[in-house]
Image (cartoon, one colour):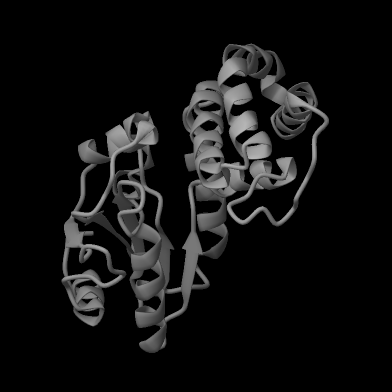
Length: 237
């Protein structure tokens, strides 16, 4: 396939973004195409793994108390983003009470899912995007540049903010087509995390297609093979 395809997937939490990405990966692979999966959150997830915070509690890292956790977080961030050291310290101090709440939920109350998602929101948006708004985009573009010539399709399943619109960013790139897909479902439940900016901005994003997931299911109303055909053949560059 001469033209490279980048699939950007957006949608509210638990809408089925990762499920769709996995199904598309298999379908593209069945056509003999090389597929890579990237994420705007890769850099964020690396930081969280260093902290011992992950969805499946694999690391089982222990801290003496919140101050021990906070000190470790500061060290990790400054080591990775030293050029922003002064600003990082100010932002961390501003978010300290929110971070304390997350620490209590994840490490003390053992509310792993909520604690993981809440920390991802605080770190990814209130801290990292406050330090540099384009940080997640820049990190992803570095990886995309390194692999785009070696694969046919790149799938990114966490398009959440307007500045992450690769169709606009890559509009002058030859032989690269970006297709933006929004996943919707009728079984989504609202909670405290639903009002975060990373959720609210989803409804403002430009998309090329809307795919609906069946309620309480991992299946979609559109046949995945048909969707792959539309992605390859349809849509503007």
